[in-house]
Length: 407
Image (cartoon, rainbow, N blue to C red):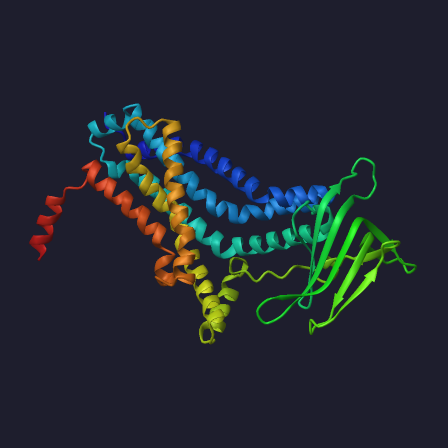
């Protein structure tokens, strides 16, 4: 008995939705944890308000959703069609006169809807979410740099246009439960100032031990500081010709820590991904005629971002089209095999997608308008090749005869 088109379409869509939702939640969770684990760890260590962590997770969903929707679409297509193929449902449909193109039609419609959603998300919501996310992350890292010190690693203590301070410690003694300040040992603080090509040393502080303190002034102001014991301060002039040494082996010195949150209500984010459509296009026009290698690279970076926002939404449609013939060819495609196949193609797509920036901006082999679409072209071409050569759903001879008659 031949299935009615509406019943067939609904049956396919209903089977497709469950693995799509599962895949979307799975990929979103994995990516969020992978990228935000350090920021969340630092927020907890610094005893920041839970609202800050929740806001970070919420705004991070913006860029995460743009990545995971195509992933889930591919995995769901391969699992759904592969499962129907393994259960001989596809064979039964074909025996009833249903073409592969008819089975693919409702999935392509879903791909079109997801593409439209991605367009709106990429140009409207994602830049705003990206800006807020980066602002919150910088606030977390600036909230208390002492709390995230790791032994054996140089950490930026604070940074301005005129000066940058790095701190290095050999050992840290955490005292969370005792409610005492953390102790740090064998400390080195370097103050650097920028020149034309590199940074020069302005001040070097060496101390055997130290601790974080909170100074309270008579007027009620509070100042975070690092109190160092048993050490020396070496000051060097800008001509690099003389150096002054200050001894505090029998005393201590306080190093004030600049709280960036007091200087700005919101961290300015200039990365192209955080720019709205109007600002992105304005920046492109601003850098279009500027001279110099740095200006040219910035211009290509902005143009690349504009093209990627137009190209990436089609990933959902391309993945649906690619997943369908792959699932048809692999007749033993269960959930495990379907998941494995989807991961292979996802890896292939995103490797090419991430390389597109280097190809267009750094190497300049291709223009941004072509490089941004490379991953889509590759996966669509692969899907078209498999579909044409393995499904036998297109009568090329009949199409050729029609073309010859018209000509």
